[in-house]
Amino acid sequence: MQTRSIPTTVLVILLFAHLHSGACERNFGSAYDWIDYFRSVSSFDRRYALHMIRNMFNFAYGHYMQHAFPADELDPIHCTGRGHDHEHPDNLNINDALGDYQLTLIDSLDTLAIMGHVEQFKKAVALVIKHLSFDRAVRVQVFEATIRYPVISCNLYFVAIISYRILGGLLSAHLLITDPSQPFGDLRPVWYDDELLVFAHDLANRMLNAFDVRSSFRWPVDSNYLTSATNLPYPRFYLGPGLRDNTTSETCLSGAGSLLLEFGCLSALLNDPTYASISRRVVLNLWSRRSSVTGLLGATIDVNTGNWIDRMSGIGAGHDSFYEYLHKSSVLFGDRQMGSMFEQALHTLRYHLRTNGSSCLTSDGQPSVYWNLDMYSGRKSNYWIDSLQAMWPGLLVTSGDVTEAVCQHALHYFIWRVHNLSPERYDISTETCPLPFYPLRPELAESTYFLYRATGHPFYLHVGKQIMESLKKHAKARVYVFIMLTLTQRQNLYCLFRCGFATIHNVADKSQEDRMESFFLSETLKYLYLLFDESNPVNRNELDYVFSTQAHLFPVRRIRSLLDQLDTNPFSTPEHITEQKNSCPSPKLPRSAIPLNNDLWLKIGTFVNSGLDVFSS
Image (cartoon, helix red, strand yellow):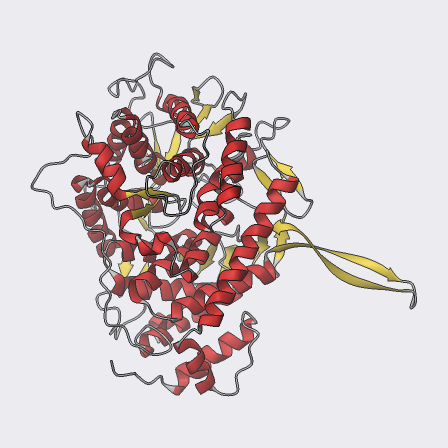
């Protein structure tokens, strides 16, 4: 393919941004050195990045095990563990997520396997079996409410944390252990007797009480016995007794509608369609509540009335994994109806939310953006983009639209480049970060990984390397202390590194918070590692794996084979619906330093850094 030249203006702007960021310490003698740098990646640089990412995981995981286990999370600055806040039951920021169930360990199990830590994986499984119990007097959420992270207007953001992290972690580890081919090494302890599956079954039964299932703990549950007025789950339940908590009836689209993968895999492994049937019914229920005018779905809904509370429609926080699981259910389970719904949703979102995106790589218009709109009127709700939207390019890749994914990734990459970290929310109109924190989220790394797998363009390796270097530089937990020097009698300020990687409190000044969430190990570092490990079994067999929204591995052929053994497969759909394919055809991308049309690349960068003035230019 003929190499396309890059205009000097583009080179100067991008070179300045790259050097000014400090993310890469390399000195460039000229713009042409910069071009050569981004056009290829040496085998040494790939090995170096892989080595560094592995060391980052070992550092964070090792300190969690040393200072925090069996607590849920590591406080990396104080080197202590963090669990459920029993003294302050209304501390929802902590208590909606943490339930004294070894969250970080369970969430990290398949990362240990992927990175080749076979013996550590076996030891971790033994520790989970020894210490895990769900008989806890704690109230948790089926869906995580991060009150301090108000990403939708009602200040509630529900994520199926129990399902994504705990249930998904248990199921993924069980599937790895019992895989007859053992592609990641001999992961099966000789004494293993399906204990992780038993735990997963127990947890799912307790979770069903969020649906207000009649006759608590009489299993199997008849999926028709769902007594909330809408058959939608309440957001909270009491983990120990397994009772629902109806103090709030507001749940969000991505929370209520994103149980399909975990519940579907559980049904396959147990030969019991109950869990898949219930979660699938919830999705169909939500789908039926689309706006009759626009076809859009809102952000939060009242499970008692079925009325939308927050009417904002988007692809980011509160919405993202609902659409993700529509597509991935079609791939993992062969659910053609879910695949058809995803295609319909994608068409609707593009028509209403997306601007200037008809022809991405050759666009002569403005950059393509998915805005947040009112689901009924279609009016723009705001001008901000949240960090969870960075998962959208990865979803587009796995659904086959690599071309648009390239453009959407470029938008989020430029937002990341403003501070070399992704703020929770970036306002395009004011070029500010209304929510400036960064809890080490994985979404940009995730999309970068999938785009590299689809295109093979070395640009994405460089993006991954920049993300890795920025995390190492800014997120490694640290404290600053004054130390008196005996000889000079002067106090010098020293930086002491602590016990893991910390949440960034503000991406502008790089200040830190004393928290390391489990998804840093289970997702962020996993995707970065796989980006550089070409020979990893996941990459050698990539069409046989589906990643959950928490990056847990589910094998396609094995799950489908198990579902075929059910008397009634809940994912069987009418023959006239076309099955979605798990394929990512690679477009003809420019084999230059950047994977985009040069003019569009410049426009995206100007758009992010110059606010909405770009529309009038």
